[in-house]
Image (cartoon, rainbow, N blue to C red; front, side, top):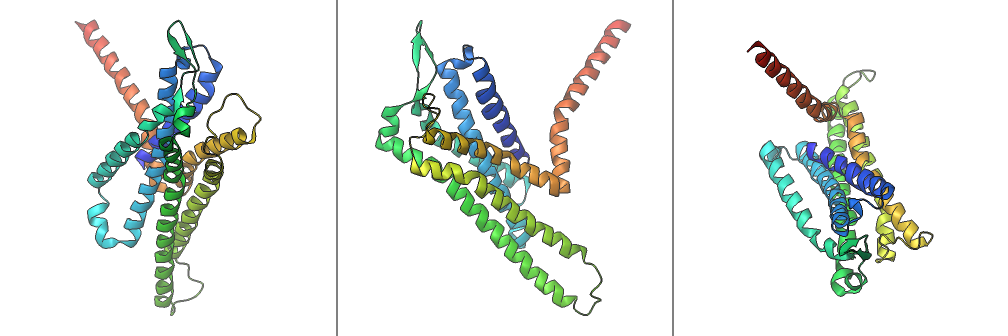
Length: 287
């Protein structure tokens, strides 16, 4: 959960604030250097991938915790979670290395490369075309299938457990409420809500990428349908990066507690530093 929240936060900070807001408000700053903006684009793409695949990992972890009790003791541990996070992060960063070659500088001023534009040579090459389609599959279709699969299996397990529980409680009064049944119904609603939001928010990007592979960040034809579809897909994909965090925060008490700890950590560290400085001043003043 901590990794998923961190990835979603990076999407908001780098993809939305730094790239779409700050760099466009200050077009002649160092953020317009080709090297800097290619780094920002690389981090933006990587952050979205990390957010998606951390969500897949978290969905699988919840499936193991609910449906696979024998595997739960071995898999659902802090050590295993750390290993999975490191492996997924390394693979995502390595997989996005070709993204550096997808863009080139737009102009050169005093031996300094400024701006960026899609590299036609790379995108029209067989390697570039294959990489573009691979990006679409890895960021949309495979994660969606896995999330839908794990959530479906988890929902099936909960439904079967509910049927067995009703049979065991058949002799009790019908008016008696069952807190466990209510909790399981909320779990099913949560599972389908996550799957539905992920599918709806990523479908536009998936379809536009399949129809028009070269529909990337074209800064010239702002009114062209491929550009509008691609930008809309990016917008919904960025929105999808934070919806799961919001859903879990609204429905899961433990998740809200963990999220609150994450948000309070910087302020706790800041207050500790302030208190340490005050103590140092007192000691120096006393001496």
